[in-house]
Image (cartoon, rainbow, N blue to C red; front, top):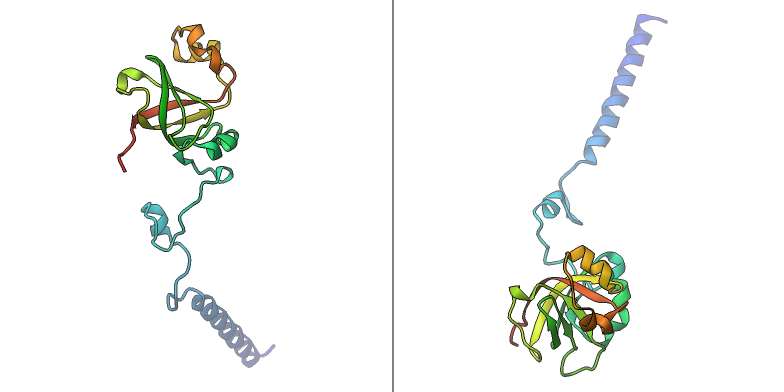
Length: 177
């Protein structure tokens, strides 16, 4: 191969390389509209105004926030192991470790046991409260006594055996509307 042929081949190869590099850089352009979420939006923990408000969807890992009503009661098994926030009327204060939610004046849902250190809040029967806690599948007195390292009064909890319950982390009077 002659020197002239080598130069021509080298120039053609270099020109092709420059053209390909130029196309690659064109894909990195910052011009034009931006779509989606960028790293700053995610890392800052901000919710964009254009972001849709999530619905309560237990399969997506969302928690439930709302009234303790028949709809929640019917779907409670889908929330087992998840943290929920329920607003409801206190139906009965059992002892210093638990009370029962009785729904609200608008509904007649089955009672729901709530385990909580009652020394941390002052509530009364008939009062509307907001409870945040984890939905548990079935109340088992010996298991709960072991976990809480407490001796609970068997007779007071008999009606709740093997029923779903809430292991609450926070209980407070419901905000006035």
